[in-house]
Length: 302
Image (cartoon, rainbow, N blue to C red; front, side, top):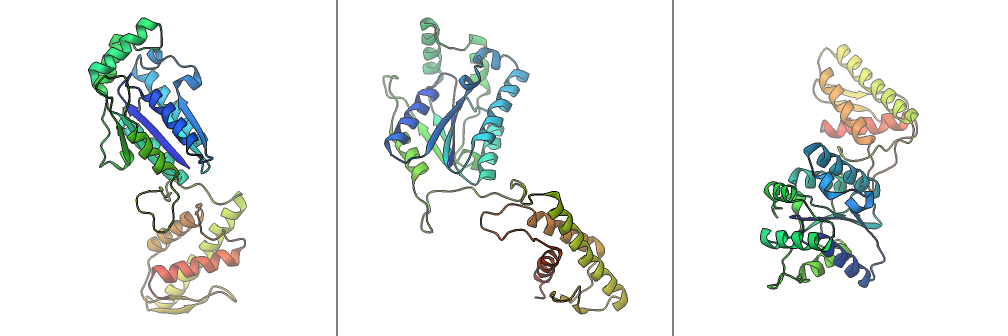
């Protein structure tokens, strides 16, 4: 149902905020499965994971792959990590868009002095902490989320109280409301990402269906090319491809490169999963009929 990206400086309280979010979701009785994905899931040491760029890149790849496997329309996934690189947040946003689910960023906006103090306190208690050199490097490279960026929106910001020991709950409440709110035609404040052609998964269940589609569209294209050659560049009306199939009406000469481009686009569109679209053509005649309708519509003559 949703992908929640935690974001903040090292030792800014992201894990505690994620747990608070999980508890709030449970109290809301939303009946959604909630899962936290973090470094601990893979028993990764934070200092080793951020010791150098290859290790950090590997960590992000592991987390991203797990998110890709876990996102669905019946669960809420919380990515509890630094997520400090805006390009990486964009990659997570793309995963949410490909799944057609909600997306939001929860930003723990804590000053460096508090983060440094909490890191030292963890070290004194023998808890997981960052080495000083790694901590300083991560603080320096942190890219703050911006509300105007689509991969950082909607953005829920958390601030510590004056004492620096408690965390404001209003953003948690707002985030829970956003995640569990029912969506209908009148809903305007909840955005569900929609898959695009580039992010949708293949619609065809076997290679034979794609082969039939490719063969059928090629026959239609050949028929148009042959008819245009016979018409010597004049207008075409009522080009027939087969019995019981719609005719093709072309009011202008369409070159072979344009026909090939339209054919590729049609195959790509038809071969993609749609949230509410019709099933793929089951035979050659159905594929030809769909392609003819597409050509007439695109050429503006239907």
